Amino acid sequence: MSDDWRARARKLPKGNLYEDFEIGRVFNHHWGRTLNEGDNSLFTTLTLSYNPLYFNAPFARAHGHPGIVVNPMLVFLTVFGLSVEDLSEAGGLFLGVDNLSFYERVYPGATLTARSTVADKRESQSRPESGIVTWHTEGFFADGPKAGTRVVDFRRSNLVPKRGDS
Image (cartoon, rainbow, N blue to C red; front, side):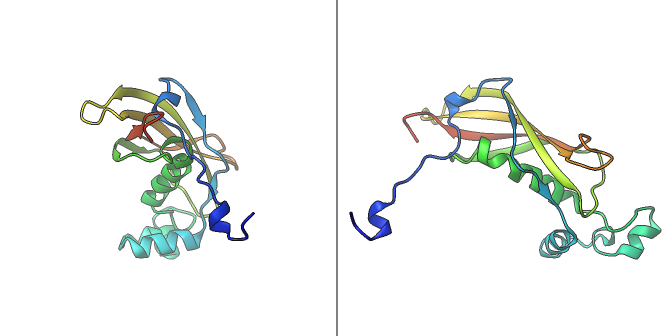
């Protein structure tokens, strides 16, 4: 056996393929993610989001919040990211997000979890080696007094490879 790791390496398939998705199937995404002040400050700065609610505690308190508010786009992208391993890691083009809604403000220290339900699937007319799958994804508080409360939801679609064509 070779000592060179490259000679021993093998590619393991990741994610689900088109045939794995049935309308109504629910994916409870793993782990969750705790958002902290550093996550929020970095994201807000890098995205040039200059709303002082997201980085100025006295301003946020003056407007009725207990402290800074986590940037809602970070909340959305965190929940989106939690869904990737189950839904789109196998590859395929991202086709967009629809019906993005925010329900609760999120503050640093909150842990979010995500759940997705297959909402629709169809064959691709332009790419017969793939299908189009749409999911309804919801993000929830994982703990604390609001545990289980929905924070955000959206629908997203991807082109998903079919089995044997990936």
